[in-house]
Image (tube, rainbow, N blue to C red):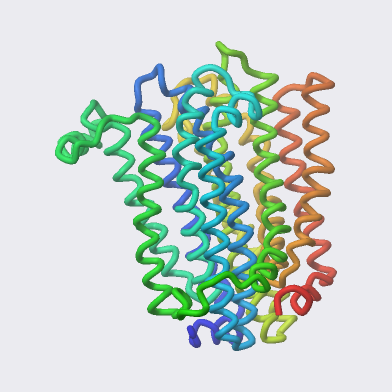
Length: 481
């Protein structure tokens, strides 16, 4: 089972192999964010009276949808840790069992979140987030579709994680890229339909007419995303079944295995909780801005955050790509009892992520305003977004270090360690500081943004200290084996 890939991870030149494995993953995650930005660009081509509210709604919906995705991704992280460890120790049967049982878990989560999104979208947007006016209307409609179809992204990330744990980095990234290209094509057709569109998309109107696709506006982007993800699931299943022989299991092994499910969830819940905390922190910033810096008639600040959070998310996703590489290398090498190599691979991956972030930081600081104006040429929200970037962008390196080292420890099954670090830093530092600054001391947006940047820096320092001490390596025997 992927013997060549496993030998590279366990025996190859470490710096070279981490780069070879990690670059496609980081690039794939960056491209996924890029295609999300393309969606935002297309929405920005709608009539001016729709654009401001639609962009603000996208910023809110991305984060709410991410809560479910991240919760599911915790199961993917746990599965990847367990599978990579078993690959390193040669336990083929255990790999197959973990893969199938994890798929059953993720499918159940997808059904649950789909119901919640359809039934409670309005409550989430208006009562919990505090969105107002047109932003609330657009966000509610969009959220029902994108969260209602959560199962597609849940399963897509799960199948990709299984392939990565087995040592395949390029195939899942290629399929993810294909899905995103399909998403863009479908989004053009569904957003504009037979109606007017930018000159570059003029080809879409006759095709939409032939296919009887109506003009759906912003909601079309949500439907395009769900359909594209669903279509890409098919080749993922085929590859895992034929190439890796991990799905679908033989008769008699397709039912629930309570012991294996308990093992997966035992590793998964701290990782899920950790990432939910991170996304919840982003939602808190959006909620504080919506409640204290906007009104029914003035939603400039929320629109500004809607612009910037899609750019901001790129740093998070790139770090998650490198973190997936660290998780695989740590998990397989720990399974093969190569602790020193496992530990060193985490540091190397964090360095590679830091190098990547230097390029991203330079791009955003030098050309950020030009990039943002592609999505909204209104100077007021762009100014809010640029103010955020000027403060938070330099701390992306800290954000990346925390994500990568947290994933590296998760590769050893130490997901609880990562969770408690984020509980301490985000719930113990960022959350109270942000609320006190805005609600009690009537601080400015700048102070709120500085709380975000400070959290990234403190998080990196804490993760580096904990990772360097090495106690997380004990988790393998206790939670994964």
